[in-house]
Amino acid sequence: MSENQNPNRLTTAAGRPIWDNQNSQTAGPRGPVLLQDYLLHEKLAHFNRERIPERVVHAKGSGAYGTFTVTQDLTKFTRAKLFAAVGKQTRVFLRFSTVGGEKGSADTERDPRGFAVKFYTEDGNWDLVGNNTPVFFVKDPVKFPDFIHTQKRDPQTNTKSPNAMWDFWSLNPESLHQVLILMSDRGTPYGYRHMHGFGSHTFSFINHDNERFYVKFHFLTQQGIKNFTAQEATEMKGLDPDFAQRDLFEAIEKGDFPRWTLSVQLMPAADAATYRINPFDLTKVWPHADYPLQELGVLELNENPVNYHAHVEQAAFAPAHVVDGIGYSPDTMLQGRLLGYPDAQRYRLGTNYEHLPVNRCPYGFSNYQRDGQMALGDNGGSGPNYFPNSFDGPQEDATVGEPVEELFGPAARYDRNAPGENDHYSQPGALFRLMTPEAQRSTIENIVGAMSGVSGPKRDEILQRQLCHWFRADIGLGMAVAQGLGLNISMPAHHAPAEATV
Ligand code: HEM
Image (cartoon, rainbow, N blue to C red):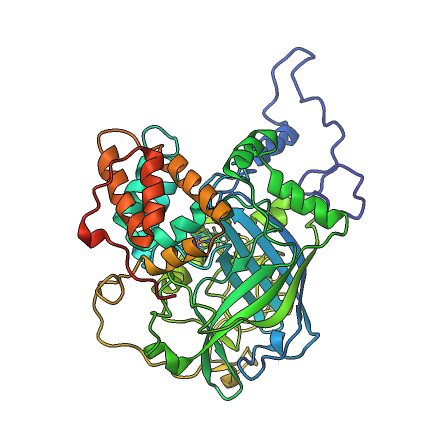
């Protein structure tokens, strides 16, 4: 590392020049090393502390800087300054990732892909921390740690466990929509450039009249969708486990900048109460026929970070980071995530992680937070560290207040899958029927391949339970999976598929 007026001169971290970096100090040419050899101590000690905790999920990733450019005027829906005028540009940092693997795992695993964007706006950093799918496996944050345990390693064997995955999914039919997408070839995208990104949750847009619109964000790849087949993905794990990292880095290095069109679906806040689908249910999409896509801008990645650890590993995204003109929604999963990310980052990176260059708001920040480990800069200098004060400390800005939001009744633990909220089958069924025959074939093959991994005394119970879900989504899908697994089909009447509504 070099923070030096003379970067060619080797020094300790405290700046003392080093005159020999090859020979430890010993008592005699063959003697033991002296305790006073601080140069050796510092080198070994820093080396021991090179690793930081990897992200508890999404540990393997790739990132790049770029530009977001507004192409359409949607200022009647949002007053967010980054969308204020056609042609306006905002710097971004985007990190892609796989979910279940470790920091060294293969890029072509069957897994959702993270698609996390940090927009450095003049009103602060806005993080849109989404995936390459518009839906998710569960609809209540209390289920998230259990779900992730099934995607990580078995506590005894330390291997991935198809039993745990299919046991959990079959016991949580709300996961079916996302599991179907995961089992299609979109579960193994050809690197990160050829996939869409989604904010997934419902968020709010707030306009100059303080009106709220619910919004879903879609980044549509301009490179075109391209996937690996299951076999190609498996082969690539051996050939180049860092395929996606290499593909992204090399494309940007040679000036072939990847781009995505950002479009939104907008719902007037009043529709939320009457829309036939719960608009805050993360296992459902809003059909485009009801809420069409409206273009907003283009995101381009055009700059590789100069250092992976500094920029990609230390990047901290949080759905809680919105800016004026963009707000949350009552989506239970989003609410859970508002809490989860900064908590994880205080543990992973330390309490002042927002001071790190990749996370720091380039337009600055002013508050009364002080001290803590690694407080970079002047830590607020001589300014007051309490509020209110008479010494010109930072003041509130009443112009960025949010509109009042109607909430929905008495506090309780409501059943998220009560009648009316328990149609887990229509949207996956409709999605399956939308696929080309070829996509249907590989999806079925992938499902059969993945479910074949289930073993042990509970095998039949787990497979039959999951099979019922496939049947309820689409009879043809259920039949094909049953046949592929060599299972007898005795479909009870109540497992007849629900009628498609999208
Ligand atoms: C209640 C549900 C969830 C919880 C509690 C949760 C928690 C976490 C945590 C703790 C991290 C690591 C953060 C860090 O160390 O920097 C993470 C990363 C991530 N999560 Fe989630 N997550 C949830 C659901 C989701 C959903 C629904 C999506 C996508 C729609 C998502 C996308 C991501 C992405 C993309 C990252 C990686 C961000 C990066 O590149 O640094 N997560 N999640």
